[in-house]
Image (tube, rainbow, N blue to C red; front, side, top):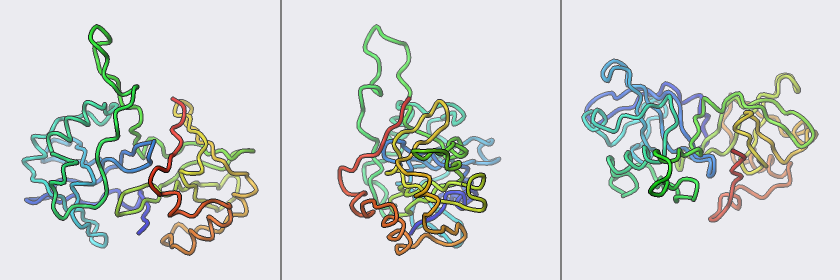
Length: 261
């Protein structure tokens, strides 16, 4: 099922032996546009510390009760690597987390389906060789949903609006759409933009450039953010833009734009 990210903020995270905290935001990989971590505020029991939880640790979510049970104990979380979520989360931080929790090893029976392994190490993510810089390079591909909210969206021939929300697929935790507020250009309109239609992202200037025309966006099927996104609406949306159907886009080996650094 497709769900909007903003509607998941504040959901409770339930450890096996007590309430762990509440969802504060999400981190996603800007190459695959999949959610890599839930950022959880622990409140008073852990002095307000924020922790990162992989979707792999989630058991069957209680969508109606707004409760996410996880296959973790409070003591495990208390002793987990302390990562400052107010700063860039480095590749080394991620490696430490995955080693500590044994994420990616299939250790959570009954957990969420999907592959939440760390992406392959690229040249830019490799640590410096001996004699090089003192610190390992940061993984610039990990982005916070709150930080990217507000990015300006541009069609090929002009502005569309700005990022207001995200629509995710709740089994594999993939970002299927950015929700754009086009109110300054199209009063009262929200539109959906698939990451597959993005040509480039400028992270320095907080701008997203998509391979669509303003006219195509203006005439796109009406989107009502108060209603779930259904398969028939998606079909009409893809037909309108003349794009491949979603099952083809999400097939093995499909690539997404990485943007400029």
